[in-house]
Image (tube, rainbow, N blue to C red; front, side, top):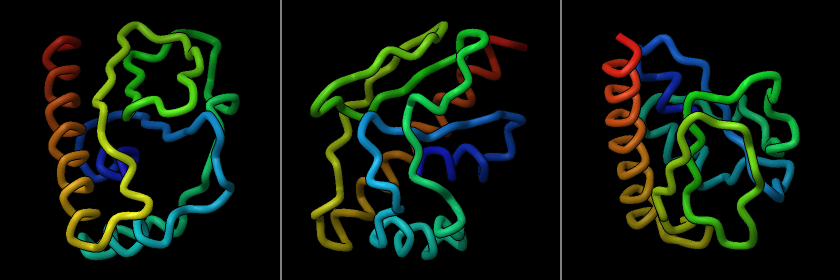
Length: 117
């Protein structure tokens, strides 16, 4: 969802979403929650951090609470938002997490655009 919000933001940004142990599929609840905002998350892939570009450090790497492990990814800035995994939450709770992610992504992109300006 964070990558989707970055894509929807209007900022000129290249965003990636990856996990330490991806399931290989997008959570249907996430697809539904994003469809409510007219975003088709079903076109995204579940990818591993091992697939991220590593030729140079990323501007920022955000983790959303490292449950099992936080893999190392080269980055200029590391941020942990400690957001609960909504995987088993009901629709209303899922929306709260979705909206929290949207707010945090928007704030981070504003911050990064001011730093690079």
